[in-house]
Amino acid sequence: MDAITTRVVPNLNLSGSRRNSTQFSQTKSVVSISCSSSEGSQGFDKLERRNGGRGNGLLYGPVQKQREIVCSAGAGTGACIYGEHALERSHAHAAEEKLGVLLLNLGGPETLQDVQPFLFNLFADPDIIRLPRLFRFLQRPLAQLISVLRAPKSKEGYAAIGGGSPLRRITDEQAEALKMALEEKKMSANVYVGMRYWFPFTEEAVHQIKKDKITRLVVLPLYPQYSISTSGSSIRVLQDMFSKDSYLSRLPVSIIKSWYQRIGYIESMANLIEQELQKFSNPEEVMIFFSAHGVPVSYVEDAGDPYKDQMEDCIRLIMQELKARGTLNEHTLAYQSRVGPVQWLKPYTDEVLVELGKNGVKSLLAVPVSFVSEHIETLEEIDMEYRELALESGVENWGRVPALGLSPPFISDLADAVIEALPSAQAITTTEVISEEAEADPMSYIIKMFFGSILAFFLLLSPKLISTFKKLL
Image (cartoon, rainbow, N blue to C red; front, side):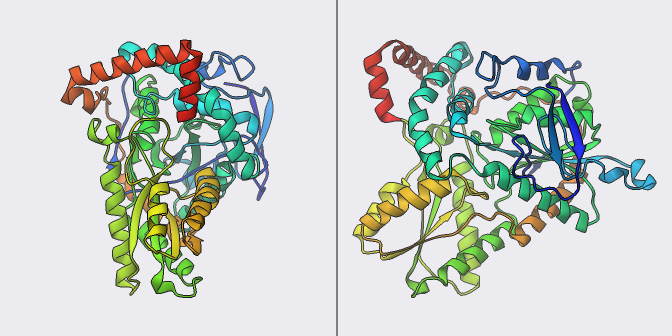
């Protein structure tokens, strides 16, 4: 990894550091991982094989040698760490376990120049564009093609919200809040952040966890509902890294796979919805419009992704809580952010908004239920695109529930989730997970992906098809 100089400065505002980051999550479902294998430090070397940040390495991104990272309580290679010396503040704690919390999230481009490489990392993920092993050699060329074609449109969106994603800054704030909530509950822990597609990458955070000799780890994805394309992708990276490292293979780990059903999350969502409803002149007439990030239908039907079921259950629990409080508004759920010509989960947010307007709905409260931090899909897609569409379709009164952010009950419940997960942490050997889709019908799966690969070749070679594909993206 790149050489990093660390300096500790108390109570520093972290928003200006390009590499600082952290994140949180929680759930009632707890899974433990750890694997046996040989020393795996060479896995981290892949991060260094970049050509000026835009070369042929594993991940795109700028490299800065001998760069100083400043954190409120310690720093690590490429990731901000809160409370690194928390267990060293007394001789008693020094002899105890060193607890760590790894917060996982998507990541986001911090400048317009980051957009295209960020998109490349996104589409190079085999959990985003699913190709069989035989055709994995197409993954990176296809990702390069899509990222180049989508970058101009994506840059417009990021420019509209200030020139970059605020996810990094917000995550830092949430991580610090989580660290403080844990301390209030008499638990000291190092908090690390691993982003899947931008800095600080998951690989960097895990490298620091090993360097700090953490003895017990809780992994918290920031996604309330589990999907193979979000939490699943990040967990797969962890499993791969643990399987190649003798230290990590013995580290007791608990993974909180989803946490939408936790009472702290449900009550916090209900609180925000009630607060926003009161801003309407006639709160009881407002339609509550849940907008969730979509996934391709094939993920659910072919690969067994539980995302759709968990999302519907999440909405049921939130509305159940609201009804218990006397809030009886009608509600609906739709899915946003679809990309490309394949079928995604329906109904689509844009189509439902038009339909609601035609049906005479005049007051609408949008609720971004997949997200706990503000980012482009809330600030640009919902606040700008969908708001404009709703007003054009006949909706007269529009509101939007903010992301949970630093909501005290929410952060406190996340801390409880960490504490609850610790006893189940254990080092176990992971086995390679075979696609449920392939297990169910391997021949159908191979045929489908084979023809998809042929299409990818044509897209790479035909300017006319590239032009058509660009219109679909």
